[in-house]
Image (cartoon, rainbow over all chains, first blue to last red; front, side, top):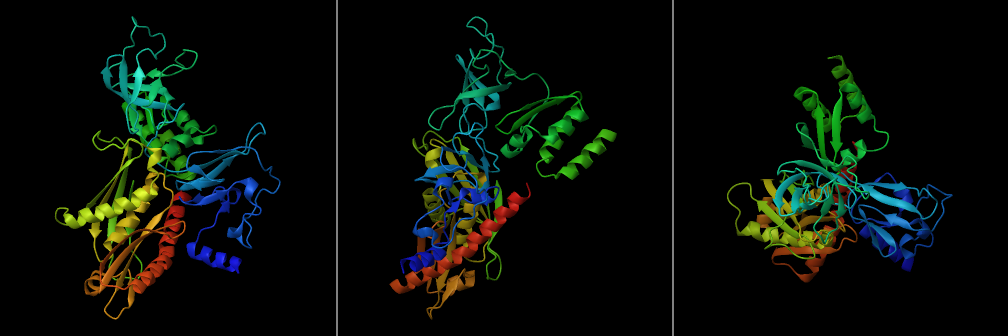
Length: 275
Length: 198
């Protein structure tokens, strides 16, 4: 009786918590609740009669599961807050249950600690530069956070310069702060980006794809022309080749990569290599 | 990111609204809220300047969005929803709600659920019409618009105009909840199509 009522109520509401493992690599919508591996059995009155499909039967249950971007903890379940594909990464060293996250397509950047970004200097006030990183407020960069900078030896940074740095403070409550040195005090590629070149904006998802370990696009682009390229996790790419025409061609290719399939890309690259 | 949503449920003619969402972006110090995002909605009519009717619709849409968007994740920022009416053939508020929801999802604003708008009209016989055309709305005894959430079809916002009884209100609400399933299915299909290209 109670079960029948629950079933009717459920079909009317259209809401059912599904096992996270059953929806991997599928598109999830905000508002859906996902069950973690340890909770799939005995879910309660909500799953009357129907068990979620298990794709990975021999999995360990338990251990800490890390809740990545697009997911929030809601009681003992995961609530999806962004639309995208659900992904999972197994833990390397065997402890914990791995990481779950939602791969969403987005253009707006939200500062995250540790991210390397390209910023544009907008103001110099006293000892601090204000850098626009594409977020909701400009990040602050102290003049001492450059390699070899001291109070007497100030870095040569003007308004309008491009800076490649990483965030040391980035949370929702405080103004983001970035630096151009790593924890050992070395620049490690960070700092002011040189003259010329072209800065353009792409979606965050494309940047993550290009920075993935085995990205074919980058290898093919590298074979085409000699170039210098800097990727910022805030969706900005700076590219520089020998001539302006080559730089523009590279910028157009990278922007178009978002929407092209692998075959179309190979066609375009072979056509360019011939000319 | 911009999205166009057409109300293509069984009606004559098309109501079409273009929606764009900007944010989380900078906010003026006078408008910032210390612990959550400031949500702003702008509705521009097809012709003429925005008037009082647009202002009241903007407020309804804003209240619905605030109930659903997780503003606490982005304090001291602003999320702006801009809606432009492309064509109006009835059920405008419901169309605006649907367009706003799709635009928020597309922009990656964190939300706790999806929402949709459904309009019901009661004509003089007491017959219930879902998604009435402009003509049906004018001749109806009462026009009710509901915003429902996707998790448990709960009521987020309701605005009504005209004469109706308590029982009729419950009837309209039940009919709207049933109709919202179609809208949510449309959301799911179009989002799946979008992500299948990548």
